[in-house]
Structure formats: C-alpha cells, structure tokens
Image (tube, rainbow, N blue to C red; front, side, top):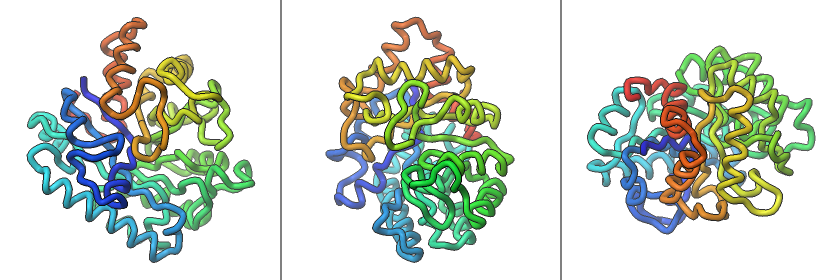
Length: 316
C-alpha cells in the first residue's frame, strides 16, 4: 500500500533527542516506512511555546529544518525532499520515501511575513498558523475566546501571501473564529492536516471539526487528515474501530475525496490500542478493506486525496 501522512512531528523529535531519522525510538522512522509500497510523509517543524518569542521561533524553525535536511542527505538512497509532483513521482519510482516539509506554528516566521520566502526556498508546502495558543497571526484552539477571536491583521495578510506562495493553509489548532476567517479569505484549498470529527467526539481541547467546518473544507477542495491521538478519538482510550468511526462520519458528509491520514506520530504520547507506531497503519486499512471499502476508496483515503490537494497529481 501507499500511504500519505499529512502530519508527523518526527523532525522535531529527532533534533531534540539527538536520534537518527533512519532508525529511532520514536513512532516513525525510515526503517519502518520502507516496508510500505510507497510513502509520502509531511515532516512538520513544530515551534513549541517556549520558542514563542519572535526571533527564537524563527531560529528554532531553522534548526529543525537544517537537521532534517542533514538526515535526508545521509539517507539519500532511501528518502528525498519533495516539492513538486515530479519530485514525488521520482521518489516513489526509486522506492524512496517522499519527504514533504511543513510548519506547525506561525512563530516560525519570527514575526515577519517576508520569512515565508525562506519557507518557499526550503520547500515548505503547508503551515498551521498556531499550535494551541495565541500568537501574532491568530488565536489558538485553547484560547479562552475561540468563538470571537480569530486571525490578527498580520494573520489575514499571511493567508494571502501563503496563497500566492503555494503554501497550503492548515487549520488544525486554529480557533473556530480563526477557521472561518481563513475560509473567508483563502482562494486556495484548505487542509486540516491532523483533526478529527466533533460529530463523533467533542474533545475538551477543541481540536475536532464540526460538520459545518468539514463541509467548508470540502467546498474549498481541501482534505482533513484523521489524527490518531486517543483523546481526540474517544472519551476513554481508543481502538481502530474509533478511528474508523471518525472516517465514516466524514464520509457520510460527502467526504470521499476529502479524508486522509494525519497521524501526529511523534507528537502524541499515546496511540490507539493496536497501533503502536507507523508499522501498524496497515492494520487500519486492512480493517477498512474487511468492512467492504472499495480499492478505489482505500486509495483515496490512504494517499490520493492528499496527493491531489498538494498538487502531487502526476502519480496516481
């Protein structure tokens, strides 16, 4: 099977732990990814709250990306950094992992929209404006006022610059008002790289998407990646059946072309029962197959939907 994972925090984890990308103690590494027929993985540069000061956020981003690129170069026989459809096609044809660079947290800009130009040069293809907390771009999902506080003026400008720069806007972690601000302003498809369905479980972190929000993502042409963090899936632990409940809820809303996977591996301290790490993702798709999902729908969920929205359409 081919798998597109729209969000993992492995790039940040290996820097902090001093571990290699090829084989490490985390939930995702190249050794395990190479067991798939093909894999496209979005490696997020996560800017944690302790780096929220403007200059610190930018330098933290640079450190994560520089280390990831060194690891990719060390393992260039099995992984390639990809920006375009042609890059992804070449990587998969050579049995390499297709690595895509993303950003989690607008603090990475260091307070300057001009740094989006640096993101473009590095190959960044998607960015969340916030993590859980407020910053100079937007209000995060853990704010005390998620319904009325959204994008700042700089955040509104950032939407337009990202659209012009071919960087997808990722609404995971945004406040609800911020979400609707993005919907209003963006002229390009919107993604939620790692979010689940509020219609299945209304989590206490305000991370899951309402039916109305998911329909807005559909209308934009975007995709939502199912997050594997148990606290977003169910109230008391989670199993593969709970992941499927979220998938099926989105499908019931017309999401056949708009649902994918955003594992959040190496950014979550626990996983659903039966899925310890990336090696176990096949279990999810085997169960979907057992339930009667067509090969075409399985391919859409596992990689094609995100391939389309990222513009990686040469490989179907």
